[in-house]
Length: 598
Image (cartoon, rainbow, N blue to C red; front, side):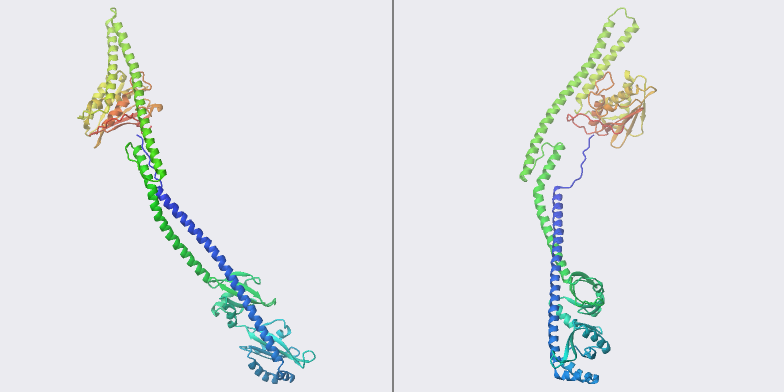
């Protein structure tokens, strides 16, 4: 019996929805990736621009402060009272009176040195170690090209102006006046205010002053230790915050160069990026939801006619020739419906023609087989009848001729009975309550009288179960007889003892008869067709309807005939009938092989 394998697969509607989701998810991911990269590039460009502006702001402020210092230094150097003070050459007098000049000037740094560039007195806001300040100023006076002074941990921008008695061109050098402004957090905040940046001054790897809080200045170590080129931008992390940094070298001192570092935080850009990511994600989710709803609607319009067409194809495959095909759908679906309807009509016509051709072929094969066997039997009857006409034959030879004539007549009768039963299969059954054991016993008696059962021992094994059922006794007996005769013919090919075993068993809904012979088994080349009509390989007589009739009778009784196993020394056929069969009207199809194992 053939079985139809239904392989599960994805439905068109689901495929459309999955494709849509994948496309929109891919589009969303690509959009996020592109937007994020473009945003990061733009943010970095904007930060670089802001850092450049901060450096320019510092340069402008620094230049303005230096000009102011130069002007103020010139004014101080031109004061007669300051010149008179420096002419005293008395350190105590200079120290006492210089304090008034410092307070009057309002500068963060004021110092006076003699003509030999030795600092006499120095004042600075917040200075704790005056001696250190004087020492650092001594070096500053000796190098007037520098404008930055780092002393006592404080950074100053200063200007050195010489003091002359008389005109500068032909006067006497009295000393030098040094004034300066402190570079403190307030000044750095003014530098970074326009760009919203943080600013720090480094002396070597040491932070001198910055706009960051004191507790965060310790995190500037990464920036201090980096070998950032002058004017280039790089990314650094301060604590948990990322910065884009730009630096500018203010001095060329190889030991402890002074460096300005401007930092712009990425935090605002990161927050904007996250906000844009969330916005794009929500928009994508809403688009996917709206697209899915639209695709469901479209899929229903597109796939529903296809599903109806598939149901029509399935119904046609199951034998429903009148299943109504869908009339709606798209132009392509309507075209498929028309093509399938035409194909279904063509298949029905072709199938009808094929059945008719098969019926004629079956009649031809039957006529050929019957003609051959009848000729064989009639020839035997005719020849033996001529011999009987001879008056000189002894009695024993006459008896032998009578026996051959009787065997030929019995063979003809068996063949005609088989043809009659075969022609009546599919008609109404004459069901009566019968015991399968009794039917099998009668079939064994008939088989034992057949010449092909000569020398074969048939054993019956009865079970204890009830083997009574509703059966057409003549047909079931004939089916068992055909199987037994086939087993005896196979067992006779065994070189040793020829044995056929018959066992009857019963279940709640069915009764079974298993027939086992010790012959050579069913040939491989006929196992696929042995239940077809007129298959009688290896037999010199017979119509080839024995197994076909047994199979047809079993099917009409709600059962089956199967070849359970077949090998050298053991071949088992099993006939099964239902206790209360539902007679099936034949539909013209030929029986098919029932091989389970071999």
